[in-house]
View 1 (cartoon, rainbow, N blue to C red):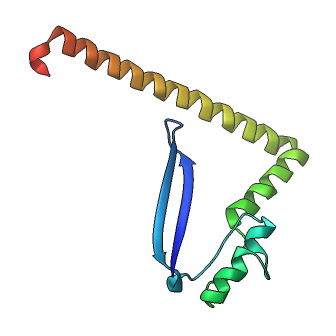
View 2 (spheres, rainbow, N blue to C red):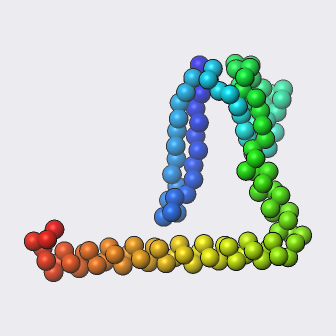
View 3 (cartoon, rainbow, N blue to C red):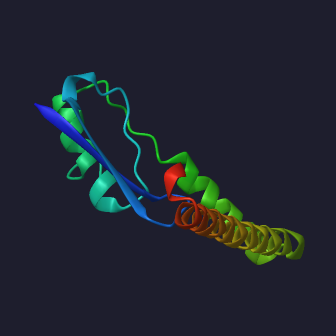
Length: 121
């Protein structure tokens, strides 16, 4: 039997990137999901199906998801935590805009130099 991992994430340019990995299911040594019952259900979920084929694939609730739940709860209750994440979000938004503009400026400069000096391209 073969298992498939499919994961997606946005890269720096905000484009969706997807990775697909195939591997032998007997080599699985752990499982982690975001808490959806159809995934981690001990009797009928994906966790149970994988454990039927590979007894060493122990289930652990996804730690990054747990961390996110804790941080969201803290941001609701503690003003300083809320302000920290608000400031952090603003910093990320501002720096990503500046890097995009810098990339656009560089592309425009290369295009202009190529236009002015065709022999250099």
